[in-house]
Image 1 (tube, rainbow, N blue to C red):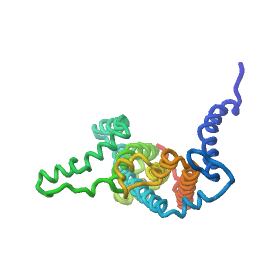
Image 2 (image 1 turned 120 degrees about the horizontal axis):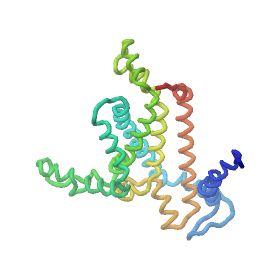
Image 3 (image 1 turned 45 degrees about the vertical axis):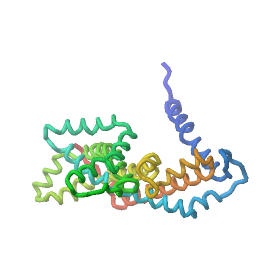
Image 4 (image 1 turned 135 degrees about the vertical axis):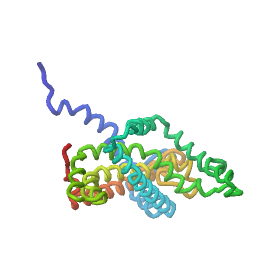
Length: 286
């Protein structure tokens, strides 16, 4: 009987990574160092694209928007998801499976459907303005709910919150309820149990969930086009426009690689912080 070696077993996965990950990144890296115009790239090699990506006032404004939206969406998602995940992990309520089913069922809703839902809710004739009008609070519709960073952030939190809940729920799985009971028996209050037992175990999953939401939110280009307006645009929008509408592959690739570098730097900072605090080494067995 023939047995495949480790290299043979890993070959399909390596081939997929090379074709669908390494090759596109390599092509983008080359494009970013060339001159692009009208859906073509040509030499010689230059760093002008990176210089424009960094020095352009428009790009700086969009980068600031991306940073703020990504940060607010990531923090809000983690803050809302952690208590839900904690309740799902340790509750004995009969509603536990119902809530879990609703969270999983939310994945069936289309990405665009959720965006359009928030466009309807926050719009001039939406649920919020209609409710305030019925209550007699306002005479004219409030327009500041829509077409800004706030609307984009709210939609992104709604989109990624179920993912974060499941990530944190899985991260809390190794922490047996017996540890919390032991801490309580030793005189630890609720806040002490959270700070000295739950949070050290949840630190790495929280960091992973934060990075997950931050990267996807800061790089999003669909949600800002529907909800962002002129003041809520992100860097992903200008990359998409360079790649499609303007055909400037070189500048689009340079902006994308600049964002990738920023994301890698953030990942390094978070990983270093976990290592320095030793929170990435704490493990509990159920």
